[in-house]
Length: 508
Image (tube, rainbow, N blue to C red; front, side, top):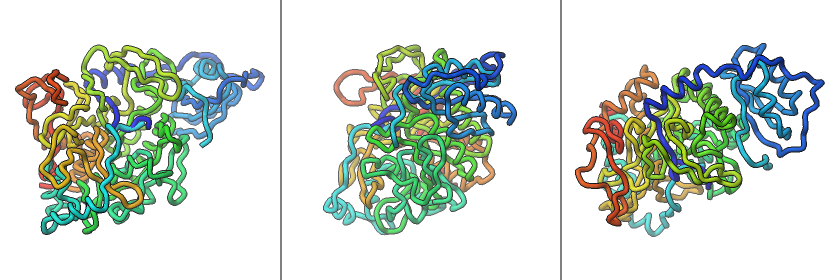
């Protein structure tokens, strides 16, 4: 499985924002060379790759660049004129180099390192399904007014979501889009709150709104369904409850339909634009964009990926959408000067490299204005896998931790939620922490419908509970070795950012 946030993702610091603004906000045209003409015969003997070509947003420039794309041996899949991003396929091995020399092109590069085939997330470890017998056992412990499986949902109680639901479960006018591997909207806990009109399949970069296109291709593509239930599973007496059980949830599929479940940039660009154009208030991003865990601006392909996805998510923000993303499961200090990346590119042959997370960005997590989320367990301590970093993490939320054992019927420190085919299961990861934040943000948007994305982020931070850095050395897995060092004070620190989000305060 590729890059679901429950596996491994990173975050965003103020220096990163400034760096991105300086590096991407004023990207110049690659050159003043004239557009390629039809007389230039391109080579077509290379692998068929996908590209993003980023231009100025005026129609004349885009039309001229599209002609140059054709002349250089490329085929336009779709042009997002409002943000100046064109998705292209080409088998010309020189396509990237040639198109970067075209007047009006500001950046361009391949979005994968392996050829296109017909046709990543952040959870940590395999899913643990809840059997019918186990579900029946949990149901027998349900208190009056609780969902049948709510006794196992320690995470709701940890942020006051159970009490918040009695005051304000959230507004039907607020939608959280789950940008992921697909959402099984037929699940009885998801169906009451699902919004088909705000759902699509964006795989390949072009939205498919055919009814049901957003659904996972099989039960192994369970990540998005689990996330959707964490956000908005209905309080209907059937199974579990979401953090915001009264809001709407939609699904925008961006993962490849094969076993890789890779999240390519063109698909994510499509998702942000689609969400923004369809009135989505919040997006949940529990993944990183493939094939690079970190995208370094000194590489033209990786630079183009950062540019394209950043344009799309900024467009969404300007349209009023708050984007929430997972910090990753590598237990990395994202404020350090050097990190090892042994997983990139993940669509071909990875090469170990050392990167500076202030110059090489995990996308979309480290993009400006995106809420970066760390994970905690039942004790409120940082999850053993969660990445961290002062000035990078914005807030934290329950994402599970198998080493922190709750006093619940199943004694499972992971997060229980919905799974395809009317099932339920436990997962852990920053992928699971992120939907808790998205759910609380949805409650805030329900309480303060006028709030902008920036104001919602400020409210998330202002109403969070910060336990402060631990007084003892942090040993997340209990093996006697210090695993991470927390930097900062009671108000802001590297483990929790501004603190663990609070659903009850959001509705008060």
